[in-house]
Length: 299
Image 1 (cartoon, rainbow, N blue to C red):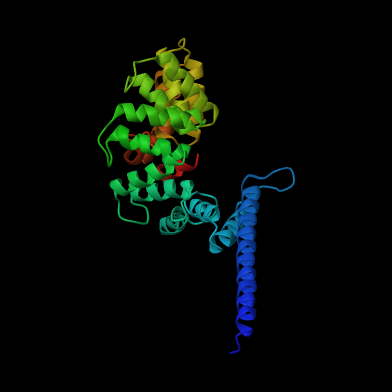
Image 2: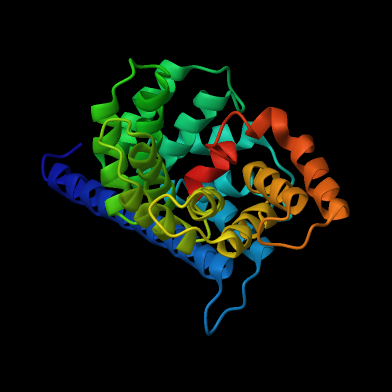
C-alpha cells in the first residue's frame, strides 16, 4: 500500500462511520415517532380516533427498534385489558429492556414484576432497588411504589417518615395513587398527626381523577362524618363509582348500605348482587387496598 493511500482510506472510514451514525440516529427518530403515534392512537385526539389495536402495533414496532418508551408501553399493553391477551412474561421481557435503558417507567414496571412475581420469581429486595431508581428520576409512580414498600415493610424496614416523604412527592405531581395513600396516612395518623380534613382533601383529589380507592375512601369520610359533614347520599354515590370499577372495598360498602338502607332504598337483591361481586374478589383485594396490582402503576 502506498503511503499516499493511507489518508484516503482513513477519510473513507470516517465518511462510512458518519453515514452509519446518521443511519442509526434516523432509526432512533423513526422508532420514537412510532411510539408517539402509538400514544395518539392510545388516547385519541381531534385528528386520530382512539384505537387500542393500532396503538399496540405501533408500540410493538417501536419496541422492536429498541425504543425504551415503546418497550415500556408494549409491556404495559400486555398487562392491561385492551383486547390483547395478558402475558406477564411479555410484561417482564419488555419492562426489562426498557429499564436497562434507564427508563424510569420501565424501571417502575419491572419493579412491579418482581414485587408481585409476574413473569419472574418474586423478589421484594429487587423490587425496592428498581422503585428507588425510578423514584430517583422523579417518577411519581416509582415514588408511590417505593412509599408502599416502606409503609408495608416489604424489602425494607418500615419507616413512616420515609413513607410521608415519598407519598408527598408523588402527590405533588398529581399522582392519584400517591394522593390516596398520603390521605390514608393523614386519616390513620401514620407518620403525621391525624387530620381528617387533610385526608378528605387528598381523597377528593384522587377521586376526581377517577381513582377507585380515592372514591371509596372519600365515601367512608362522608359516611362517618370525618373531615366533612355526614352525607349518606354522597357516600353511596362514591361507593357506586368505586364499585363500578370493580373495587371490592367499594362493592362491600355499597352492599352494606343497600342492606342497611343508608342513603338508598333498602334493596336486598342489590345487596346480594354486590356481596357476590365482593366475594369473588375478596381474597385478592379486601386485605390489600393497593388495588389492581401492577396495573395501578400506570394510573
